[in-house]
Amino acid sequence: MEEQYGIFTREETDELLLKNAQFGISAKPQIYFSKPLPRGRREFVPHHHTELEMSYLVSGRGEYTLKDRVYEMNRGDIFLFSNDELHKITYVDGDFVLFNIKFLPRAIREESTDGKAPFYLDLFWNRKTSFSHKIRTSEPGGERYTALLRKIFEETAKPAPGSDILIKQYIIEILVLAARESGYGQNDCSESERLSADALWSVNLAEDYIEKHFTEEISLSELSEKFGMSRNALTSGFKTLNGVSPKNYITSLRLDKAASLLKSTRLSVLDVALECGYNSTASFNKMFLKIIGKTPTEYRKAYEKQ
Image (cartoon, rainbow, N blue to C red; front, side, top):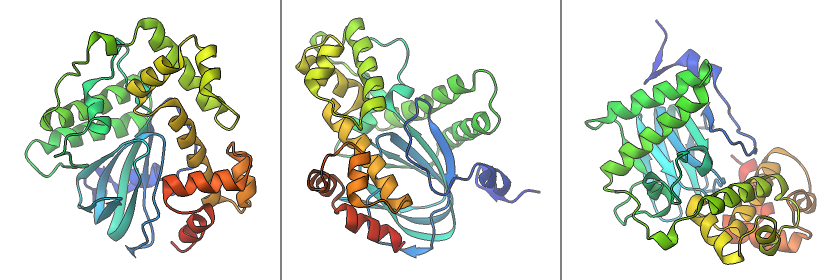
């Protein structure tokens, strides 16, 4: 009998293992297992990404550290992280395996868009003071979450026609369950806050454009003119559907790529800056330090020690 890792087997985790996910924006959810090494404690070198994230601890135990809190990680725990939310696994013990799901907001938005973000995205952008990043599947009702995670894995490991649709639906079901249990209701925004069909279309086009051209010079004026919206309307609509403004989305994409290059290449800081859309090390260093909390050089050195 295969050795069990909770709802998975060791063979299954090895087949879908990705130790170091590389930077890359995808319209589809990114789904993979990871095994952070080495065991023991490590420095808080923040992990940053543009996508929303759901991670499930398959086995082992550890700690997730954020800027303002630390969570104990136990087998069966699910964690939810927003885009641009700095976090890091700072302690690892045992045979530690994570099942990771990263996705852009538009990858799970329902097609019947009514001009507002789905209420379950409040888990990421409009959190209550009592919000917890952790969901314990060991508690009553937790099997609903693990059953859906298992379905996501099966559709990923053996894709078939319609797998993308089912994966999206299973992710939404998990978020709906979590939102309901956390007391979130339907998003009752006012009519003036709803996006028209044309505005929805323009925001989606703006997202596509930014993801293809974020290393180039992009201004809000250029985006608003290109996609037929005022600067204020584009900024407001973009933030409604993505949780961040166009400007911050561009910055997030640039820093994601920069972090990946700093960890995986020996490019100079200047070359990394130029690759990511900055025209000087000064502007790059300033933004990296502001968002990540370390300079690019400090960030690279810290990762080399881990």
